[in-house]
Image (cartoon, rainbow, N blue to C red):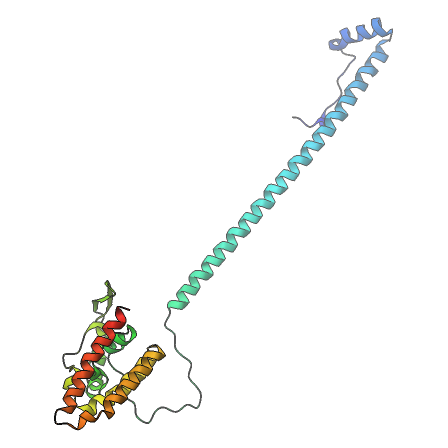
Length: 256
């Protein structure tokens, strides 16, 4: 549709409109000037109607265009917001995966005696609430872990371990037992009793249930004070009992 504001009026005095003017002369007894004026007035009235319709159409189109632009802007803003949120989420995930260093406490002194922690294998066992020989928490176990510490730190080898019937890939240092480990009943009682203190400390760090820790502590105290220790084979009897009962204890916990 063309803009009616730009239209020029027709030349009603031209021969093309002679037949219309003849009708005005015969039907209304008007001369040529009057006929031309009537035709021009009708054209102008029609033009004004078409201009009003044109303006209304343009207003509708302008509103539609503005609404479309606004919807497009909102969509772009929403997409930008989602992209920023996704980028922030990805950045947070990256930050979570970055190694974290705890902040130090100003003025806090180091310990007088620095003891190497148990092996990664032993700590992994504790974190999974599994049975682990007390030897790993003895002085010999600490020395063994310290001896192989540098090698395990640089070892990128991985091994497969089984956790609740599922196979997982872990660092070889956390799944490899020591060849020097001894069962509990082959430890001297003095070494066993010293190791259990370190064992209990690390079970607390591994977030074992308080009820279970209390039961273990009481059990160790009963073993340490049991009168049968004074018998010739008392120490072997007590440690054999401890070894068997701890295996059974963990087994029963696993099956509920």
